[in-house]
Length: 329
Ligand SMILES: O=C(O)CCC(=O)C(=O)O
Ligand SMILES: [Fe+2]
Image 1 (cartoon, rainbow, N blue to C red):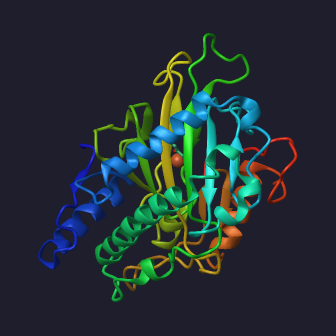
Image 2 (cartoon, rainbow, N blue to C red):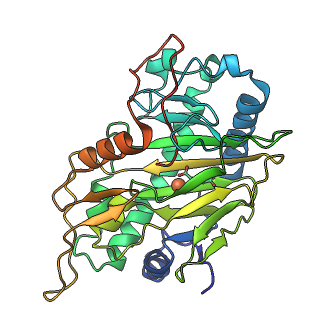
C-alpha cells in the first residue's frame, strides 16, 4: 500500500472538501500518517523556523541552552542523551497560547527572547491547518456535527499545543550509552504536523513493516495521536514511528520540527461508536499505558508525562537543574 499523499490546495472549496476529507480519512484509517501537498503554511516561514533552529542548536554553546530545561509548562530545552530512553536528540519546546512565551521569558534560553512573536505566528498557522484537518476527520466519521473535533481544540487551551524543534546531532564518535535516535512511540495527543529537513523517520506500515516516511520538499507529514485514536474508537489510527542510527547515522545531523495539537484538558475521551452493533471499546493500550473510557485529556496527558518524562521540574526555572526526561510525546 502506497504512502498516502493528499493535495489540499482546494480544501476551502465546498465542491472539493468532501473528496479531500475522504482521502484524508482513508489515510488516517490505514496508515495513521499522510503527506500534505499544497498546504497553506508558507515555505518561507518553515525555512525561517529551521534557520533559527539551526542557529540555536548548532551555534549556541551547551551552556547557553542547558540551564533552561523543559519545565512543567512544557517550555525549555532538553539535552541529547538526557531522557529516560537516552535518545540521541536534543529538543526545544514552545508551549502555550499566543503571548505565553513572551510572559515566560525566564523559562526560555536567551537566544529565543526576541523571537517569541515569530514563533507564536508560526504556531498559529499550524493550528489553523489542524482545525481544518479535524473537520475532515469528523466528515470522514459521518459525525452529524462536522465541527465536533475542532470545537474541542481551541488554540487557547492550556499548554497542550506545543511546537518542538528537534536536532539529531552529528558526532565524531557514536555515543556509548544509547542505541537509538528517537525510540519507537505513538504521539499522545490528537494530531501532529511534522516538518523535516531530510529523511530519517520510519513508520510502521499497515502490514507491520517499518518503512521510511517520505520527505518531499514543501510537504508536511501528518500523523494522528492516541487521544484521537481512542476517541474515534480506533477508526483513526495512532501509528508508531521512530528514528534510528540506521537511518540517521551518528555522524549525520538532522533537524525536524513538530507541532503537537491536543484537545482541551477537560475533554472526556468517550469512544465514539459507528453503529448499534458496534462493540464499545473498553480500553486502549499505547506507550505502556492502558486507558479506559471516561478519562479526560488532561488526566491522560498527566499519565503520559509521568510515564515518559518522569518527575517534572518547576515552571520558570532560572537556575540550572537536572534536566527532565524528554522523549516521545
Ligand atoms: O524527528 C522526527 O522526524 C520525529 C519526531 C517525533 O516523532 C516526535 O517528536 O514525536
Ligand atoms: Fe512522534
